[in-house]
Amino acid sequence: MTLIDLMLTVCLASNASHCRTEHIYMQHHGSEMQCMLGAQRRIAQWIDQHPDFRVVRWECVDPDNVRKI
Image (tube, rainbow, N blue to C red; front, side, top):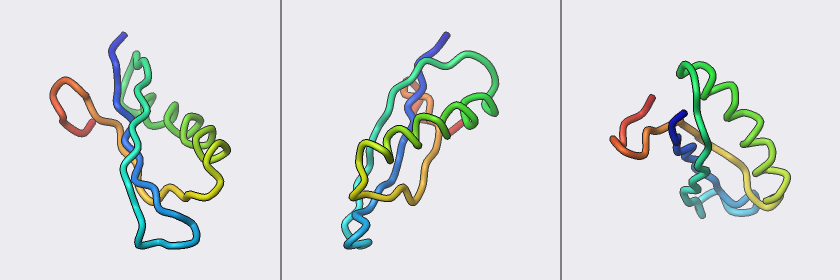
């Protein structure tokens, strides 16, 4: 099992020009597709906890190599 950085680009719902990057670190085992599918659940949880923001982009990144997967 390896650690994956789920990088979210989020913007304020009331001001789309105010954006930032959020990092969610999660355990990963399996293929890149499994990371992408598992990410959807984690993103939904983040959205529920941060209703003033909207996710405009996300990606799974290997935090050790800083490469997109």
